[in-house]
Amino acid sequence: MPNVKRLIYEINSIAGGIQATGNYGGEGQFLASLGIDPEYPLGTLDRPSGAIASPVYQQFSSDHMTSATTPMFITGAKTTTGVFVYGANGSLVTYSDALLAVTEDGIGNLATSSGNGMTDYNDYIYCATNTDIQRFGRLSQTAPAFSGSYWVTSLGQSALTNSTYPGTRTVNYPNHFLYPHNDGYLYILDYDGANGRIHALITSSDGTGGSAEWDVVQLPPGFMPTCAAPYGTDIAIIMTPQGYNSSQKAKMALWDTVRGNKPYRFVEIGEPLATAAVNKNGELIIFAGDLGGGCKVLRYLGGESFEALASVNEGSPPPAGAVDVRGDCLAWGGHVDYPATAAGIFTLGHRSFGMPKFAMHNIARATSTGTFPIVSCLKFLQRTDYPVFGWRTDTPDDYVLNKIGGAGSHASVFQSAPINVGKNFIIRRLKIKLSAAVAATTIITPTIYVDNELASFTAGDAGLLAINSTNYANSERFIDMRDLSINGQHNFYLRLDFTGTDTNSVILPIVFEIEPYD
Image (cartoon, rainbow, N blue to C red; front, side):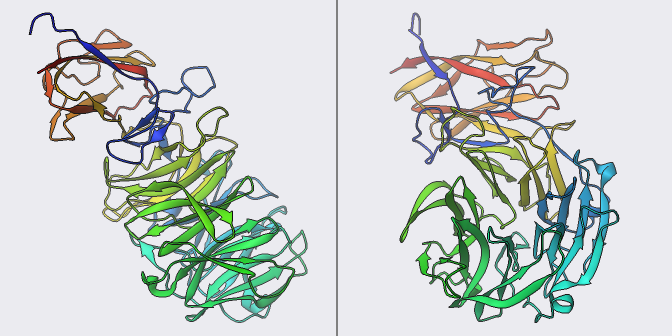
């Protein structure tokens, strides 16, 4: 085909996030990603890069958190330094602020516990077990310790009920979420097998002088409370139907703690399962969906109305301890099977000013190699824009905590939006710019899919080359694959797999030269 005019197609931005459908996306959107963070800075410039950046997350947990316990909650505390993690076998583990494995300390294992709930409240860490609450403190004093049964023995209350909640990938949603409200009380979620119940306790600011009240608000029968969050001065209580009965929908109860023991409004959420909630800058956000059927991020608009902000079509809604907020950015744990079977952190919105408000990204991938990975907890700690998160897998049975930075291999994936040519074509050239020179630790593998994935061309096919020090031995920063012969009839997209151990990233734009023909 002599003298055929080539067409130029470019990928100029990924700031728009993951697109909603397989064939249509908005400006700056793309098909899928795992562990790609466009806000990750490159080099010495501490600003969002806007690049296809693949930061490394490393394991920092050690023996105490890898001994057959899923990390269920993670938190800091107001009156001490360090980080606390509560596991599904009842273990409470601490780390220094630096989150180093050598600082890991197993405080103790609480009997008959499933990691049911944990929070920081008035100079103590409160841990819900299957039927009781214990606390660890005082945190501001030397030699803090557990003080035994607090809810049942010290406060003289009835035992909590260890009802079985729905679960996903062998992780049950917590059944005793602990919520400290802005009225000074700590509220305990409970389900007695027939009715949801909310109990309360209060102490002075140093944890002394405790008192408690059983069943301060009555919830409708057959609904299990899974989470609570502030809605102004009121409390939003999220509930899921007992037995995960898909003929009913999850509900939200709004309760004014000053005006009695009955919620003033019940709102149907519209999904069979609702598991987590958070207040983001005054907006009430709820995570709902279906087991294995995806997760929706909903914003409450008042009255009877919710607005869907984002949707992940795979996985399940996150556990209550696996959501958090950083600035204008929501973060939650999820798991998917596309573009690969993986667990990771999804975000909606950006942590930096000036970026699209409703862009969804997958910014971190769990460093897992086992089956059925799931993120079970996360938190923004260390005053950074990168979450700390815990996860587990089934085979092998790994239980791990990850943080940003350090040494480790990538397993990140980027898939561009489909580029529609609309006729027969041959991709002749691909130009990619890198943030750093190709090194021995750089491995970025391109794959091009054509015609809605009817065919694919991997490294070694039709002139495509893996970006590594074997194929690019001269420390190149500009990759120019100029001898391609990739045929398609309608459209194509580019996939990049980052599997090296450095943080070499792809600087946009990516440029394709294409020859169309009839």
